[in-house]
Image 1 (cartoon, rainbow, N blue to C red):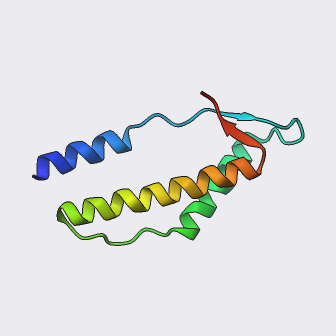
Image 2: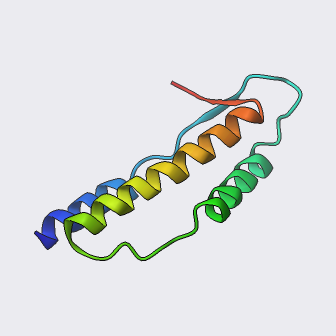
Length: 84
């Protein structure tokens, strides 16, 4: 069971970062926007202790997804969208 959890966390942790395209020509400061959205996502969803086992892994996955959604919304508000 531990091996499955470790493999799952490895796959999730090694996913490629998304490519972002600016939909407006007003804001082209990608590094600044990326940094600020990452920072705000971490502040809004601070790390917590999710415990062990399958329940802890599910909680960690849900937490990471919430943080990722916050980050994506932040980038979209600033005029960026994910490249396909």
